Image 1 (cartoon, rainbow, N blue to C red):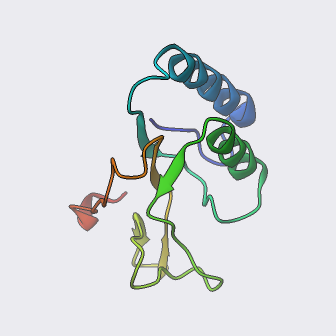
Image 2: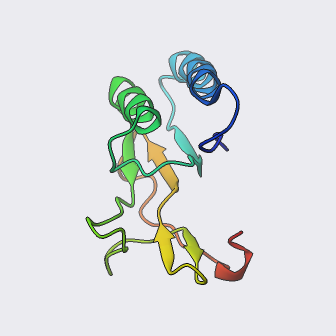
Length: 118
């Protein structure tokens, strides 16, 4: 899944629409293992409207986030995985996540090509 970034037209409406559609599928297939992954275009460990909506959706649907990320200085800890790098500005963050309704389903994930991280 790819959610719109800051500055996108009607960003919150688009996020809510996508999560509403996902909720329909979760309800329809509630007896199955569910994995939702993608570029959420927000740091889910920071307080902002997009993160709040996504985190509430996850909690409501009993979804567990895999790979918690970020520190107070914005640098990824050694036990986390950043998924966005901008070496020219010395910026790194975590915007890509996986959620699952079974915490044993996704054990880890890895950024395969840092160069393709545009």
